Length: 450
Ligand SMILES: [Zn+2]
Image (cartoon, rainbow, N blue to C red; front, side, top):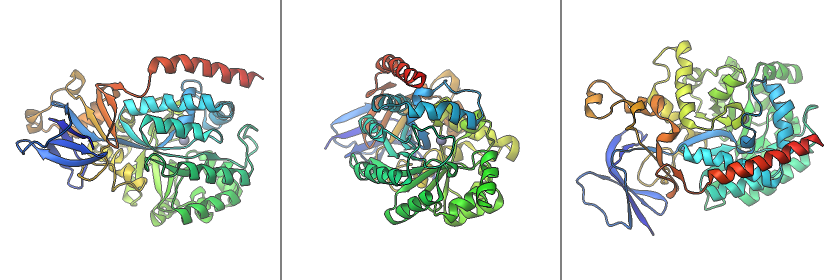
């Protein structure tokens, strides 16, 4: 078994004590085998990585993305959500083939991995989820994948509409193929798209399957005012009330957005231990609103961070998202409401807790999987670090959350696999992606012209 020693970095561990350690990190068998203080005897190893001057953080965790939409970046802008979905994204998704889906997934994965994200909870579209799984397997990222389920709604294009029985059958078949694949690196999540695109019976069936089999359940909820009004009209209750009635709440449920929640809904989320993913860029770009994260935290709700899909952000970069999440709450809740360290927790250990993976990832601790990101914070845009900066009140977390950018990422490991080396993604070829991307968009345009 190869033993790799990452030497000389400063480790921002995100452990329970929030230790920041000058320690070398020994990786063996995909795990963190030891944290070795400077001056302690050096272990025998097969390989060494010189990380002097770099800062090591846990791999970033995003609990809401859509790899299937990465090809549609900058093709659906400045629209309200309903038009964004019905006029652009749904027809685009419906026009994907297995080949163009694989390319879309790879576009997203190339950016995610390059910018330090090592775990994702992905929602696919209705078809071609195997192609997403294949690209996830090849990329080395840790992922929950799942096909979107949609069996109700007049505005769903025929290319995406499915019968409830078919939706459940295909989801179960995909779960059988992908849950636990690649040594457990890939897991399956059941993904009813949102309450308005799913029949009550479908949601009830999904709720039952998830409750008995322990899968993650991933859906969108309370993103827009329209959804809030529509749930009153259709079910005479709140959207969260409806989801709760049909069994779509609980500790394995991850609801993207939670922008418009009333007190009764927050109470249901807290009592059922249901999780929320905060997607601030998406919520701003689609003018959906601003989720009240301090209030969710105060209620004891687990909250992760996600960039959502490329066409509603238009980045998949968790550093952008952390900075925005921190800044966005301050005018409403004060400058101390979202401190940088708390936001980095949201994008690491809290994300791991949302996915039930807190024993394996989310912090740099012996025994956990080696999901690690090495950052070069010695650039002019970071100012000056070190002991003098700390004596003057400088905060390493602030440098990571407020100043760091994706290009500061030098190395990325997921489950001990070296995915980015010296700033270069090892498993993705940007030039090839561009060339094939243009071809793929041509095919989609042709399909939609017909
Ligand atoms: Zn989404």
